[in-house]
Length: 248
Image (cartoon, rainbow, N blue to C red; front, side):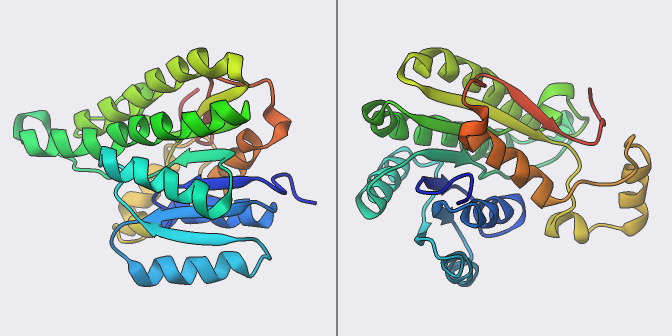
């Protein structure tokens, strides 16, 4: 029996990187997994098959969590298809990096919609189901950048800092209904995105981390398993840092 046996989880933005690792790790622990993707239909279908191979129910939904109505429809569809929603992981996110002087209004608004508003949309919709069940674990993906800031990422940092404030507020509002809400703050995690970068630059980042390496997506996924499971049943309103002591 896995740590998440019998539970149903929804992971947004799961076609690659950290989201994909979370979906796989949850399925390994026995959870039925619903997940969203936006652009890559092929990757979505491949992940569905990969998750089902673990003997759990899995379904991918092509959905934009930053769209309020679409997020509401998504939650309704997941509950209809799976019969429950015990765990929500808000992982969908993008970057539009630039120095503030050069940042466009569109680059600011797009980041706020995709990274921050999407959390409001899905949590608002999912909270109804979780309140009826008097149980639930919500995990919002923030970032080390949301805590310490980063030059060239004012929009991204603001969206991720906003997620922390949102997470803590939701934890206070829904705690009496036995619904927990926490945030996970990854540091420098090596994914497909970082794989496309210059190796010398990446090594420079690794050298600046006390553990002298980047994190793996699976290491973020492990933190999510803990927060999704009953092992963390009295932990809510917290930010769990997964960053190799990059920020303490």
